[in-house]
Length: 330
Image 1 (spheres, one colour):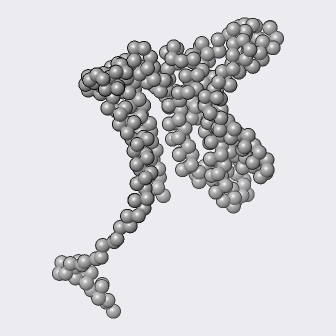
Image 2 (spheres, helix red, strand yellow; image 1 turned 180 degrees about the vertical axis):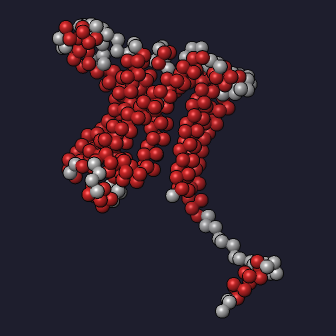
Image 3 (spheres, helix red, strand yellow; image 1 turned 120 degrees about the vertical axis):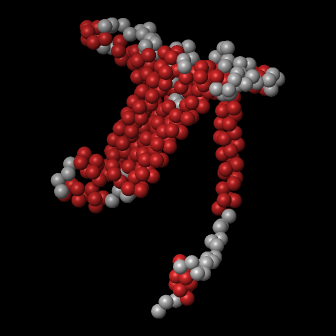
C-alpha cells in the first residue's frame, strides 16, 4: 500500500505538487563556544601574519617607520622580485630543502625504530625508556643547543677530547691530523650542517617515537599474529600490516616534521653564533638577517617570511589532498 508521503513525493517528481520538507534546525551553540578560541587565534596568529604580509609590500629600513613616525613607502611586489631574482636566495632555498628532507627522513626512521622498540618492551621498562627519551623533547631548544655547542667546543669539548685520545697514527691516517685542539667544528658548512642535523634529530625523534607507540597500541595484534603464522618476517609484518594502518599517523608526523625542520632557527643561530656565516643560511635565519642585521630591511625580511609560509602551506595542502584522495579510494 502506498503511504501518503510516498504519494506526495511521487506527485512532486511528476511536477504536480511541490514537497515542503521542514528545515533542519541549526544548533548555534557549538559555534558560539568556538568564538573565544577563534578570537585568540585571530589575535595571536592571524593579526601578526597579516602585519608581516602588509610589511612585505613596503620599503621599511628604520624603527621610526615601524613606530609610525615616518610614512611607509609603498613598493608593491618589488621586495619579492628582489628576493626571487637573487642567486643567493636559490642557494638558501636549496640548503633549506636539503636540510629538511634529510632531517625528516632521519627523524622518522629513528623515531619509528624507537617506537617499535618501546612497543616490544615490558610496561615498566617501556615507561622508563619513554621517560628518558622524552627528556630530549622536553628540553628547551636553546638549552639543548648550548649543551651540544659545549660538546663540540674546540678546546675543552667532549668530541675534541675523544679525538685527541685517538692514536696519532690512526688519527693522521683517517683524518689527516693528530691534534684536534682548536679545530673549528662549525667552520666547515658540511660539518656545520652535520652537527645541526644531529641536534635537530636528537630533539625531534622522541615525539615521533611516542606518537608511533600510541599508534601501535591501536593496531590489532590478531592481524600481526596471522601474518607471522603465514610466514611473514618482522619487516614484512610491519610493511604489509602495521604501516598501512598507521599511514594517517605517519602522514601527520611527516607534515609536522617538515614544518618544524623548514623553520629551524634557534639551533642554527646558537651553533653559528649569529648571522655572520652566510654559507649556512636557511630561510628562517635569512629572513631574520635581512630584517634585523644592519642596515635593517624589514620589508625584505617580511617578504622572505611570507615565501616560507607559502611553501609550508603548499606542503600542508598537498598532504590534505593526498589524505582526501585516499579516503575517496577507500
